[in-house]
Length: 393
Image (cartoon, rainbow, N blue to C red; front, side, top):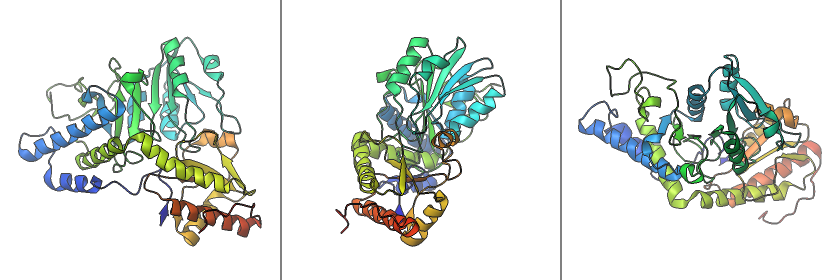
């Protein structure tokens, strides 16, 4: 199988990730729930993963790395823990449902929402930020990069806007962590960075978390057992247990630590360059095919290694099924949990095909995907598009 759905989950993991999970499963107890060797081993393993993520994300105190089951839970922790009725939030049409659905639910509790609109090409209106500002605006919540188009948010500009107006900046780093540079304390932004483990951090599913700037307080959303201060009727207020009720996913976090160490060793810049080069090859070879419509801004490389497209008027799920059944190529079709951006692009009924690379994909796999789409375009529409033949051998 040629796996090109890495924006959902990276399938191929670095050496050491599976071994770290197995070692934790077979040799570790519950972190913070005892002083015997197996429990202490679990605590040390999780703390080492905190240290690794803190180093990668530019956080001086590892206690301000709080773990969750995924970026969706992290965003729920951040949004429910900082927003109150009467607050106003600015978000964007690029957002995933991991941002949208918590915001919509909060809107039913008195939080007011506005969204920076995207045009038919997916471009956000740069003048909308100031236009949407209100006296009760509390926060900006935005993605680091669109999971549909791979376009990157101009976080420098967004952060400057937040600083001018004293706003909290919460970032969904699902598509950025492990690929795009993050240095919370060095840059001074964002205030809260939410990440997931199973994408470009090369960890297992069921892992993620928040990196939190000093001075930012998040009210506990989940409360329960913490292993400390058990006679306190309230959730302990010290990070990280403030946001980590219940037993953590020790084996998963051990694997996340191994994946994050690989990212640090390789550097996000190199990993991005490697995967982006393959995405660029794919795009450049298929751009002349008249039957293909691409979505996003491909004027700047390297970029997040995501290419979204459609083949003429054919439903994206049909084309994805043909890629899988005929060519053994795995891609994502449909709405990608990004309803507002599909509405802007005009692809609600058709969806889109999303190809996404990791640093473990190869040029040969990319050429096979190019050939497959050329053949499907010819078979379904009769249009070849005059693509160059270079690299076809």
